[in-house]
Image (cartoon, rainbow, N blue to C red; front, side):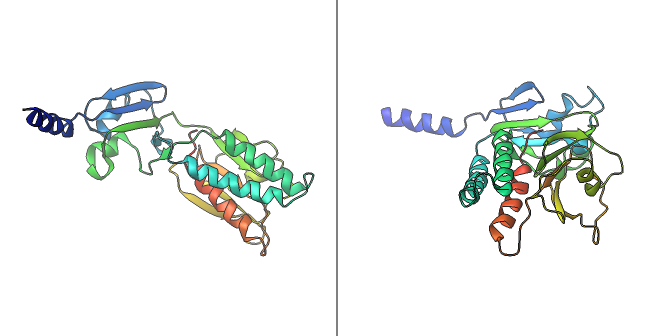
Length: 240
């Protein structure tokens, strides 16, 4: 009899109800079963004129933290090799402080749009058991600068401006790379943009883009190139 009860309980446990917790901006919603993205968006879709291209969609877990730890470890290794008052060491220390302060969550790289989710099942995934975050806003008017800049943070979005124009309007550190920057689009794509005068790319930044100014890497310092790439990839998971 006890064996049969154990079997029944085991079967019932296998059919346990999934719980999906979704935070939309600061409001928490709970679903007792898997739910489609369109159902979630329907709760708030008509509340405001949301700017869907800048929507951040995240899974709230700790899976990105090892990625942050790896970047910080690379920075620490490079700092140890330098004198404390070396300009590169100062820039690396400032970069480390920036990355330590970032709020991170695992980004789900998927276009989010209420209209698109309603008409196209490919853009209407079923959210399973777990914790999620949807960051919605009206059309933003900011871009976010980080890396080898004296004052990292949000800056006014300049309609029609390219990456080079943003770097001309702020103070860069002496060891900033003069030839290119990284742009992280609102949808989470990483683009390496040339900014040198002889091969400059005129690609406009969307509102809520990130612009990472890398540390200058010589041909004989592949570790710096690796660091720059990994910082840009980590920035994809920033919650802004």
